[in-house]
Structures are given as structure tokens and as C-alpha cells.
Length: 161
Ligand code: ZN
Image 1 (cartoon, rainbow, N blue to C red):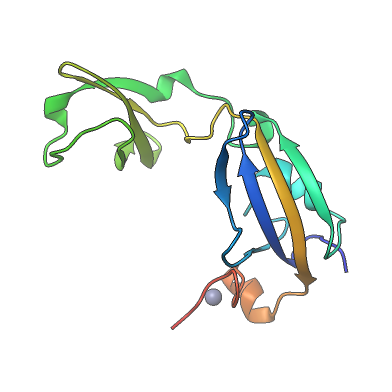
Image 2 (cartoon, rainbow, N blue to C red):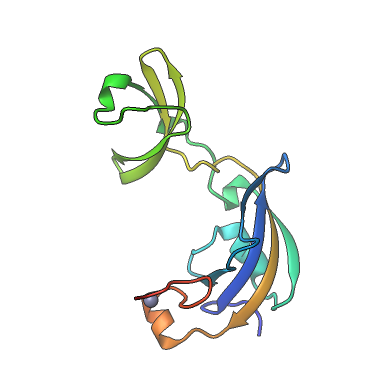
């Protein structure tokens, strides 16, 4: 069985940026399990996995366009410190949920100069080329329940009470 639309796919992966820095990895933990072809992974990664089988290893280079998108400069804003009511320890790297025109969005504090705080609403990996080392550990049909829930049950997926 190969990776195709609505198959349950389990992968182990290590994500590095162009400097070779490890950004994320499933190594040492549960594999990542997802239902293929539903936008659960970034487009470049789903495309590369299509048609591959269990046991295959691949190295996938994903451009920003097929990853988390280009950086949008309009999502970077300077906000006076007093706007952060109730947040005591504002520091670079702090992430929090903020309201925006498109609904709630994760923003990251990227700079603090005096009383001005720069927040960035881009995904932290926007504008980055991503390198995935992937090993496909399982490809199977989903259960009806998994399909109706839209997520995988069991190892690497959801655990319902
Ligand atoms: Zn479920």
C-alpha cells in the first residue's frame, strides 16, 4: 500500500533549517500519524510522500512557498508596552494569542526597544526553507471512525478518553 488520499500515514521525521539546526523531530517519541491529502501537513511534504510506501526513507527540501509561506511584512507591528496589560514579563521569544482582522493569531515578540515592542504574526517558520528527513513507518486504510473524526486514533494520533 502506498501513500494516497485518505490513507493513514505514520512517519518519523527530523526537521532542520538551512543552517542544519534541528527545529523539530519525532525521534525518540511516537511517530507522527496523519490522514493524507487533507492539508494536515505542509503542502510540499504531502506532495513528496505521495505514492511512497512503508519503509521508505526520503529527504525532502521544501521551499517557503510550499511550507509556511513567505514572510508577510504587514504582520510585523510595533506596539507600545502599555498595550500588554496583564503580561508582566514581556521578552523576546514570548508567544501569545492576539486578535487580528482574520481572527485569533499566534504572535511572537521579536524585539523590544525602550517602550516599543515588536510583534510578528508570521508563522515562526515563514520564509524558511525546510529540510525533512522522513521515514515512513506505516501506511494503512483509516477506520470509518477516523475518517469521520478527521484524525488518526492510536499511536501518534489522538487518544480519546
Ligand atoms: Zn477521534
